[in-house]
Image (cartoon, rainbow over all chains, first blue to last red; front, side, top):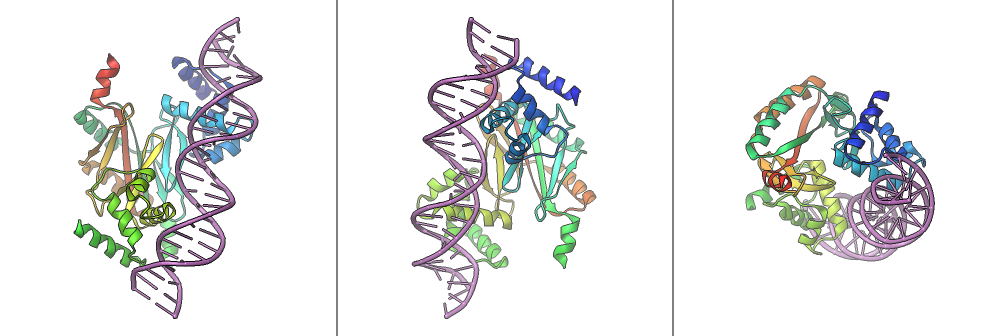
Length: 143
Length: 143
DNA sequence: CTGCTTGCAAATCTTTTGCATTGAA
DNA sequence: TTCAATGCAAAAGATTTGCAAGCAG
């Protein structure tokens, strides 16, 4: 909450960009929420900030590692990065779209470290997306 | 090659959709190649198949698990799925865009199985994308 | 034959650009 | 005051739709 906004401001200053109303507004629209599509962001922010600016803010945020994109079927969604929420992964249902978060991931981290080191990449981040049929849809489909 | 086309046809028939020229053409444009953007696909297929149809074929292929999208920065690319190429992951360089494939992934599989089972998802697939700064760009940037 | 597929043109939706104006430091 | 950041309008790009025509089974 307040804490997060402060961290945002700190991050922005550290990168020598201004702390502006638009940036705080977009950030708040993402705080404590499910990942959002651009449309959802737009309608949530609803005319307080221009659509173009939302794009520009998101682009900046991605560059600074404040948010990242996740791919869900055809669409992508935006979500705050690890600095603001605990790092995690998603499982989405290919039938109903239901999205759940997976917080256990020690193995993944170890794996990533191993291969990035092997190939000489530094400063790495990653996303893991899992798709499947959720237990509910499985029942329905089975008739 | 021929083998792959046969597997494609088998997959299409199994799903009760027609084996058509458009579908084979799009498939071939993806076979033995780097992941491609829609534009690259289009220009590669170059007017033999209408753009709309390419979209429709890709949509179908994604639904049937023949191809999948991978997110690289702002853009996504299309690549054949595990049935046609060995399952693997990517590391992309955020500076120069260089993309390399990572074929070791036993840990990932084990992890996926564990969590999907825990949350009751079946029929799962997954993508893991890793970003970082490649060794070359690291040197350049360091001056 | 039959109806799934494709092509075409137009509609929509998404994202980017240029430029004048505003506002943070 | 100064230049980064924003708003607005318009351009550019990407994706989808509706419908007539074509082709696989």
